[in-house]
Length: 375
Ligand code: NAD
Ligand code: 022
Ligand code: ZN
Image (cartoon, rainbow, N blue to C red; front, side, top):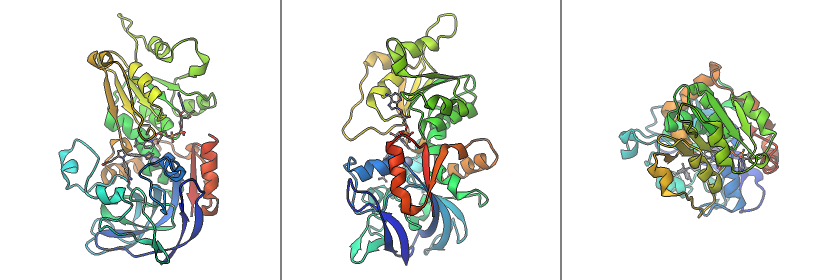
């Protein structure tokens, strides 16, 4: 069939909106009409050419929501008409990783997904004789896409596509990092570095978990108001304090008779390795947990003194907030529908597919929290 897609033709070039061919679903696959998609940092990272694993030409996009319009042979978990969110971290419930109960990083289709292909090693997208690569197993910058059955979460059909698409990456990553990865408890103190589309969701996750003190750190003072909207209790701009940011945060979090400072939990939502170190060292001696969420550039390394770890801090990381997609994503949609979490104010811009490149410009300029394309 003919579909409308924004094609990443070449690294460093804007996306080109055009008509491309999409083959129907094969065994174990579903055809989904994408109704809305967010524009996220990895799409930009890959399009820019900075991603060494980036493949071209490809159909990018990994933060979508839509409706199942056809299913291939053997598909049992979803049917035509179901509302779904594509999953760049699938959940097969059969691989050693899924069965371990210790990780959300399902390995069932990992190899082919990384090669921009469906599990049978082929692509469903083409222009004439040229095949186009899939992206993160999702390719949501197309009004129709084909996905493996294990890479869709069936969600509440009353939920608005133009909001819940954000649950396909940013919302789940931020909230999941707090609940699944850090396992934050009531009364905790926390520091969140970087108040963008991920950091703000970490903040609302911390509010949900009942954290007492939620300190936001950002170089941009406009982010103070944004953080406060979702539960941040204190704001620090590293450029506006005297001396070291770590010492400042440790001082702010001094509690108890011994007056040892440091937060119970810290989160890097910047992707800067310098910030990752600050986050670890701003966590409390003996029990502090620091979660790396930001994705750093290719080849970057993190450093700290071993003493920081020997004295009981834990450095950890998370992919997709540790969420098991088919199990957890529908729950987050329900939380949104019940008013337990907010999404609407974070979607600062809504665009047509034809204007998708404007969404990338807004991201570069730091003007958007999230831009969403509505088909
Ligand atoms: P964003 O650009 O919207 O936000 C980043 C924020 O960090 C900005 O507000 C910026 O001002 C601030 N910042 C930059 N340098 C800083 C510094 N030195 N100190 C304090 N603040 C600083 O980005 P986002 O959409 O929120 O994404 C954040 C990161 O999370 C990206 O690296 C993205 O790739 C990553 N991410 C990871 C996962 C995962 O599963 N691990 C999922 C989604 C996104
Ligand atoms: C999403 N991300 C950043 C912004 N939006 C993001 C990027 C990478 C990962 C998670 C979220 C990630 C962490 C660990 C892995 N990935 C490897 C998983 C594994 O090897 O099992 C990751 C994922 C997908 C892809 C590449 C890397 C891909 O499909 N190309 C989950
Ligand atoms: Zn993303």
